[in-house]
Image (cartoon, rainbow, N blue to C red; front, side, top):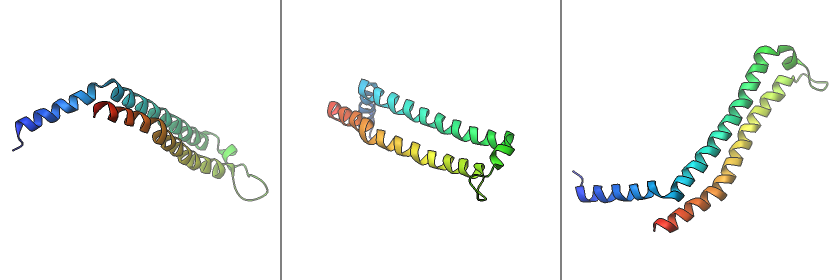
Length: 109
C-alpha cells in the first residue's frame, strides 16, 4: 500500500501546479491552438468529401493534358495540408509552448 504521507504530498504538489496561472495559461493556449488546427483540418477534409459527393463533374475534370483529375490533385492537397498543419503545430510547440513550460518550471522549482 502506498504511504499516505507521500500521497498527500504528491497531491498537494499536483494541486499547486494545477492552480498555477502559468500552467493554466499553457493548457489554455495549447488546447486552443490544437482545437483551431483540428477545426481547420476538419474543414479541409469535409470540403473535399463534399466535393467528391456533390461535384463529381468538377472532380472528374482533367488537369493538364494527362489523365490526372482535379480530384486526385485536391486529394493530395488534403494530405499535404495535414503535414503542413502538423509542422505548424510542431513549430509552435517548440517555440511558444516550450517557453511557457520553461517559465512554469522556473516558477514551481
